[in-house]
Length: 202
Length: 210
Image (cartoon, rainbow over all chains, first blue to last red; front, side, top):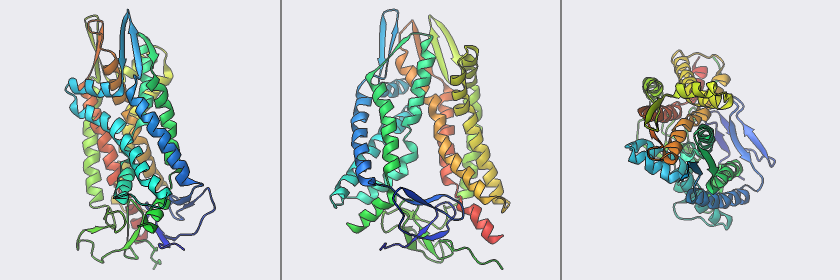
């Protein structure tokens, strides 16, 4: 039995009774068609696996250079954080803060936050302030823009191709994987399930 | 009289925007601030002052959109020659050099998406103001689109960041971010907040009251 047999649609406010769904299906609002809740297979295990993989890739992506530029015997390599510093140096501190926030701080917080909330749940425990951490992770979702950054890298490569020769760095590959791993983590995450678990183990 | 739709508000239930828990609400919303007992989020029947806030943000975004497109987004210095690029001149450069797909990506992400998003939000605001009951499902879908596409406009900002970090070859070549980058980032951030502050449930409130 569910403690909260009703759910309200987020986009049109219509109330629906919660029914148990077969695995892999989603309940949609009868009036506006937005997704109400889903039942994903092995949601917790799969999300944790993707989050751990994501953390490893995240560290790699930030530790190694993205691209290496070669021109007339000169080498120049750049990591993401160097880009942030370079904007700061050019007195674009707002811009540099935005890039830092959307590409480093938010994705990093989301990955560690998810692990912090989900791993104890796996063992039927709840870590300190879990509900608040999970709420913040969900709220920051739109501000993590790694996949957009990846597109930015591809455009930059094409743009520079005429100017100099470009060698992709290790971080470029780990970034590429990270996008898919992050998308996987988001796809397998079932927020309703997490909230139910948090409720039960409180 | 039409039977009242069974919405959370009609049942005096507050729907938590972050954890979906329904809490019993007061009959008068202005009584006091209510927080979700499960996750601590602030609860409202509808997002507070949604229409006014969204209008203000949409209008500011329209204003910032102009310098974002007119001013240079980056300055390339190569062998002592300095050249400034706007977003559109970048697109034209790619078309001229035959790189159509990249030109299309930049045009869609930087010029088309922000405008479409602003026009959709303006349209939704006007439709809500007029209390129309015209195609609510499609209008809700339009809202969902604006929420999803806005982030892709950040592409140009990231391109400038990467180029600035990478092209620092002293006298040979260097790239600096231009003022349009700042204006453009403001447009993206403001339109994202505008989409978040619009409450699609108002579309449906008007249907019930029609």
